[in-house]
Amino acid sequence: MSKFYITTPIYYVNDKPHIGGAYTTIAADVLSRWHRMRGDDTFFLTGVDEHGQKIAQAAREQNMTPQQLCDQNAAKFQQVFDTLKISYDRFIRTTEKPHEKMVSHVLNTIQNKNLIYSGTYSGLYCVGCERYYTSKELTDGKCPLHHKKPITLSENCYFFKLSAFQKPLLRLIDTNEWVIEPEERKNEVMGFLKSETLEDLAISREKVEWGIPIPWERSQSIYVWIDALFNYLSGIDWDGKNKKMPDYWPPDVQLIGKDILRFHAIIWPAFLLSLDIPLPKLLYAHGFFTVGGQKMSKSLGNVLDPEELATTFGPDALRWLLLSEFPFGQDGDISLSKFYDKYNADLSHGVGNLVRRTIALALKYKGAIEPPKAIDVDFKQMIEKAWKIYEGALDDLKFETAIGAINDIVTFCDKYIDSSEPWRLSSDDKQYQTIVYNLLEVLRHLSWLIYPFMPKKSNVLFQLLGLKTETKKSLSLGKQWGKVEFNNISQGDILFPQL
Ligand code: MSP
Image (cartoon, rainbow, N blue to C red; front, side, top):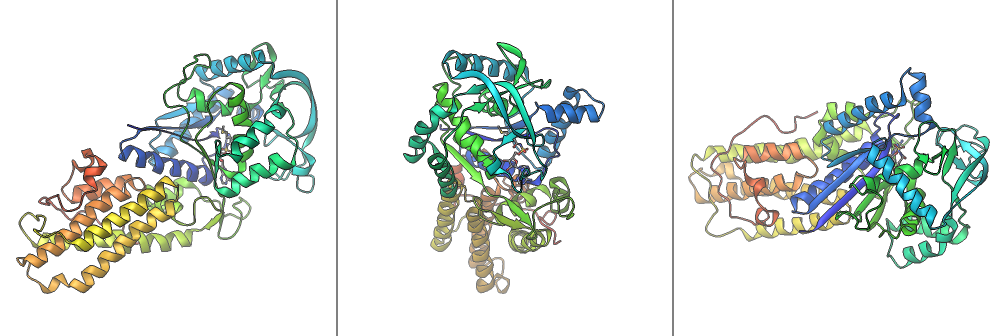
């Protein structure tokens, strides 16, 4: 059995669950469900980032302790993830004691290797981002994210010798030992490493009351970003000391948004190299979306709320819509009106309508619908081809291609129904039963295929087909054509009511 360890970023606990974060998490969930369905020993880690000045400040403003604020908001994230059918195996919170202990151990180890030294840092600091900016990175002298002027800050702190890792990182990325995808993002990191001199990294702050103290100088606490990166290790219960890494290590996929590429493509692997820990197999940075052609913003009133969207379309359909609108690695655009159109086209008129038509035809025949003596080769080949495209697409994180393969099956069947005109035949006719069998068998395959994207609808469809135990089968059995008999079919509620 292969293992599959997948991570998302951990989200700032004082923010509201955002459609951008939901996008990353849904994508990770689809991959996790796909790997579980295929029999891989899967571990899906997500969670929240709970330290830092911003959180202490937000707690003060709400008359709470930071821990109370974290508890309250972490629960909110979990609730939204439940709504979105996120099947994480572990929801990590960076205020958990084992995480804090692990980070302390790791810092001691890096310090003992002479890769940490004390100094003074002075720079342009954005409180919103909790990070320093170089003047080059600012837009008109302002933080590109918060549009506020950063403050000049000077403080004693500890530095990590990040500069020592510039050459090793370049080599590892160049030789694909450290894989960053898509290609564009890899080139971005390579370009940066080739053209800029990597400076040592300030890793601690003075007077941040809500953070993990530097073990040998407790007046300093570790920079929240560094603390957060180590969640990928504490999330699988590594204690920071044991020489043997947990079996899930290294991650097979680390999914992030392109905004946090440098943290994950440069700083994170440098820390791992400093600890002699193998690097993750793949770092994949997806694109950003605009809404109706514009950046999402409160003032424009175009902010999409994941919970509201799940109420409108249902969580299953929302997952499908978000991942089908544009290629995963690229930037794209979404909008409510596009969601309505796509919902009606793919789901209500597409999959949903095929289910309704097929079951209505099947119910006209009273007996069990058995595999025909001569298997329909066209159908068998069509389904085998669809599976091939679908599997390759999910392995390459091309969600939209996998969804396209499902839509193509539906189109094939709609044409087949129209051309074979089963309503002209008597239900006792062998030909009628073959047509219905082919269509039911397609629906069974569709239930498997839609599962990673729409887990609840997939289960409903299996039930309508009278195949409640189908998911207990291995995928390789499930993928076979023409072996199953249908004898307990029912027409339930409409799967995707038209909106
Ligand atoms: N806490 C850090 C990550 C630490 S990981 C060791 C952080 N958190 S975040 O909540 O701000 O963002 C996490 C991820 O959510 C980002 O990769 C980002 O792509 C996604 N999004 C969060 N807000 C977003 C938008 N406004 N738009 C699109 N995606 C966004 O960064």
